[in-house]
Image (tube, rainbow, N blue to C red; front, side, top):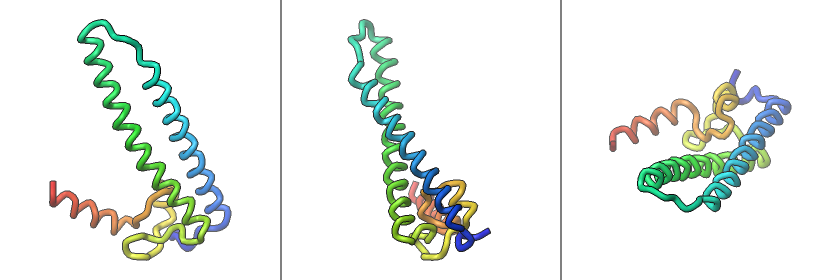
Length: 123
């Protein structure tokens, strides 16, 4: 199945999946903000260190979710304007299985692999 075989139902299902993921991220963001505002006074250095590590992990996860939220918003916009499923690098249609596995992807497998191989050269 390729991307041109996406039916209206497939697109609707993918849109619903994107909206669910968006909602989940927004709920986590709300919980993160609540958690940060409810930090209590900590008594000893071990608690401070533990809290610092937990906070750093939470911030990292929050930033990853923000990146995903941006990609989800972009994918929803593409569904609305009829360009959903088109690779941003080569303009070919992205395979439907890839879109179903990762509905907010912007690149086909080949372009993603090429991008990753270039980024690995600089690490």
